[in-house]
Image (cartoon, rainbow, N blue to C red; front, side, top):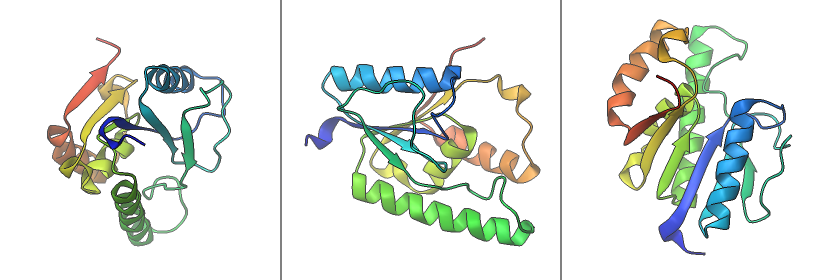
Length: 158
């Protein structure tokens, strides 16, 4: 395995027929066809894909929610958030990607907080107008901290 071209693309899920799901599977497949070592990291309950994925693409399912949408109070959700960041940090340390493309604001922030920028470039592939997103004050604070630390933000909108 050539570690100099290891790319990780994060996504919540691929099991529904949506635009982001099609974009992630198409990009991963294209990069694999070009000889890159590509892993799709699914941060949800399933690693099933609605769309076909190139056989050279590795799909890993790691159920991390970063405190979003889980039951409990504010404190228990923050502990879950910290636990998930720690697991993500360990996974990145084991995988050693050189490029990480995140597809959700929570993944972008978590990737930065997990320290992945020490060894990888990190891009947030934003699929929605930023002003449309409704985040809590906690996430707004994290985004203000983490967005400037990203290598770049890829927008497919104005």
